[in-house]
Length: 247
Image (tube, rainbow, N blue to C red; front, top):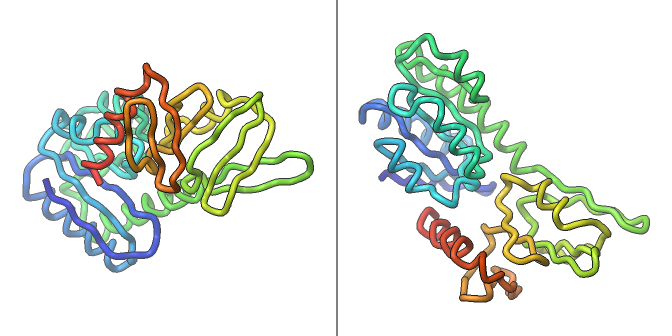
C-alpha cells in the first residue's frame, strides 16, 4: 500500500487507486501527487491491487474517501453501487483500456471515464482538477438551522454531533452550539453519506471526531462523552478502528 501526504492548509483529500497493472498506478499516483503539491492540496493516497482488498481496506470509512479510481476490467461497475450502499459519498473516475463501456459508467454516476491509451498527462491533470473542484464544493457543504428568528449556517464537516431532548435538537460545533426544533431522524436522513452515525436514540455523531470508544460510551475530540446504545457498540467500534487505521 502506498500512502502519500502533501502539505497544505485545506481539508485533506482521501484518494484510492484500484486499477490494473502496477506501472500505470505509479504513473497516475505520480501525476496526482505533483498536482497536489502544485495546488497545495493536502492529500492521502492509498493503492490496492484488487477490489476485494480495497473494500476490506476502506471498510467502515467509505464516507471519508473523496475520490476512487477504478479499472473496468478488474473492478466492473457493480462495485460502485456497493460503495454507495456502504456510505461512499465521493467521486469515481474509471481508468481503463476498455473503450466501449462509457455508457455504463454514466449509469453508475461516475465523474469521468478515462481511456488510458488516450490519456496524456495534461488530460489527466485537467480531469482531476475538475474532480477536485467538485470535491472542494462538497467539503464546503453547509446546513442551515433556524429557530425563533435566529439562523446559523454551519459547514457540515465542522459539526461534532447532534443531541435531541423532547424534540429540541442541539447541534454542537467548534464555536458553540445551536438549539432548534426538529426530529433527529430528519437530520439523519439529510446527512446520509456524510459521515454521521446514530449511536444512540438521542445522539447523531460525526464519526471523524471520535477520539475513543468504550463499551457504553464514546468520547469526541472536543471532550464530549456520548452514550452508545448496546446494539450499536460493535458497529461504532469497528468504524472507529477502521478510521484510525485508514488515517
